[in-house]
Length: 114
Length: 226
Image (cartoon, rainbow over all chains, first blue to last red; front, side, top):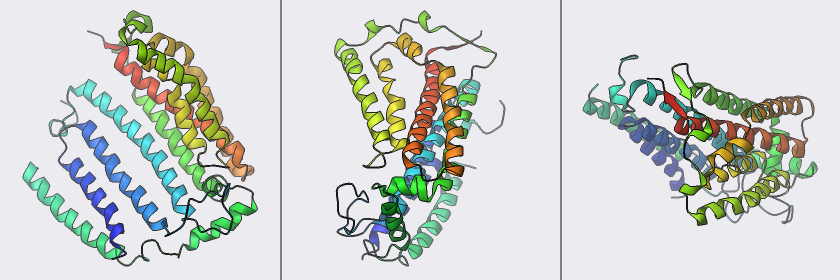
């Protein structure tokens, strides 16, 4: 039973992908991509978790104290930063699509130009 | 592809992914266990270099080269956002004063809150950047706080004032200089956690301000030529 928490990120990823596939609005699709990506944050933190351990910051605890895995936390930070900037870029593209084509429904954006 | 076919393809792929993911997850070491070989190797190094915040130590010291790649993704992404949202020839930009986005349109309470929070938020951002090697925080987190802080002026309803305190060329220069300084620090002076925190804070803040400025321009100022 100790492996069940690992299934949560898989579930979040699938929810996000379902949202992208059924999306009727590009802004909604971008948000769903963010949801799908947040699965990686949860997975990384789940992998690094250790029972009865604290945050890996040694300014006010003894160096012998157990801490959770700091490596995956650093990777999560990287992940969040990249995710935020990619979301900004995708939203910028959505703004331009809306201006050029007058719609943000992916189903109406089949051809490259109207 | 109709909606139904698309859902069918999704179902096949999704079930496949779920099964493979579950099989992989149950082969992992137990949740909350004590085996973290990589994490345990980073701890002595962080303590040896007097960086109590191990995450800062990993980002800016032990894995600084990886952070360099991340930093360049951040810059490329911000650059692309600015490029995609630039004003094209068929559009005209109105000067910020032409609209009535004046201070009169918001509640007094909101305006006062915005102006009061501005110095506090700026201070918090600087604190998070500067204290990042000691306590939770660092350049990335503090940079975002700094970048969003000046937009409290917009929240207070004063777009012209925001445009005045946010000269775009200065932030573009700051972004480029900070990115260059980070490359130099990461390649030749690895381990300068405090300096790298400051440079990253500057770069993230500038990138944030630039991207948000472009979104504001699109929302408030751009009119299509008819």
